[in-house]
Figure 1 (cartoon, helix red, strand yellow):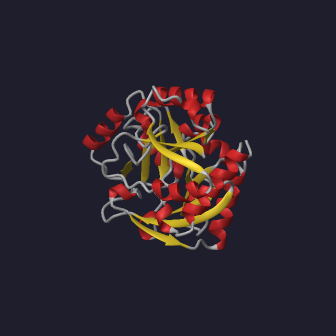
Figure 2: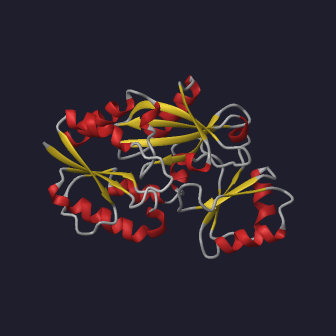
Length: 289
């Protein structure tokens, strides 16, 4: 029996984690899976044949410590996704690399920090009076703000304070997130597995389940599958797992919002065959390395 560790967070809280659905299929393939907090510094990583980063959703508050742990894991056993991909995917500037490879991504302005006076300039450059400001390093929709044309100065100053000395990004607010939702496509071992549609709760624009978004399994239309295929093909080295978040633009084309390679929720519960597909991908991945 081979040993595998799933890295997770200490306290799940309100988070919905379904990684355990893959444990039985992995056992059928000869893997004994342990769930381990990424903060455990005394774990003898060499005792594991493989370590898979899973629900480490608080890592971005302590990025240096997180990378130190992953580097220790990488020195003693095999890690997925790779440390190289994690370092690349940590900063949302990876969108620049994707765009450079021909992937259609949501247009973005990169800022060293946010200033109230930047709003008009960003709106003009992006051709919209509805903006989303979010951190370059972040997760779970934290510190993501939607800004309209009549935003109160007090709120702009609050946002400015949140990003004092902190790189951020400005994007046009994609209206179809409210009218349709945001799609997520999942890939295991480079192959498409399943897809969902995330519909934000009333009064919310963020599509995280923890913020009340409704989750619907979907069969992606051809143009959505094509957009996802282009995005996953642009990632090198090829990841064990990936989640690609896409939204339909005003021309009904799909644009990449984010490409998640570190700790995306894989929504295994939304497709009965997804846990087994993930388990087989894990088994194939580590057998070939």
